[in-house]
Length: 228
Image (cartoon, rainbow, N blue to C red):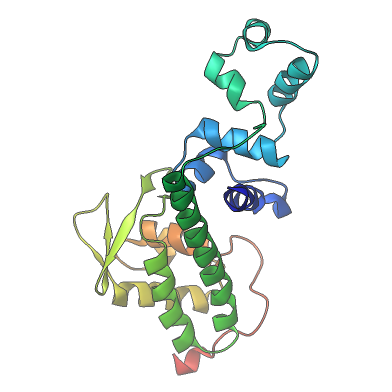
């Protein structure tokens, strides 16, 4: 459970370098837990702070019971509990096993994305192959298009099946989009720049993987486009 808490806290704070953190909804979807449980875990880990959370904790520390806190804040009973840190965590074996599996998947996805940067420094062929393996790992992950539409996908052979689309996106289309991204040095202003079917979905996926940068450039060597 401690490992699960650490994974959630790490995922939540992963955007903090640019002055922001991932949303509670993003984290809850990623780990398949409720928003309230996500918030309670983050508060327990000491990485989630809002005016309301501080108020609830302060009232509790002053000896107020749950009903009194509900009256002062206007929150429901379940919401009050979600703003208070865990005092003890007791879960059954099946639940702990499920959390361990989610931690493993989170770590594997994180390592796969990090490895993409190493591939950029080596060769395009290696980057192309590892990208497909990374896509497989993120099967079932919740992505959001630039227009705010949520989607998931599964990988079947050499095709990506988007849950919002009847047609699939082929591996060759993914490779074409990747070549466009490399040519533009990662600075892709929008999905249309990818020039492939399913660009709105691929753009969001590449953005999540860090291969697309809205501003700035990649650090390091880019493959020689004459050899692609």
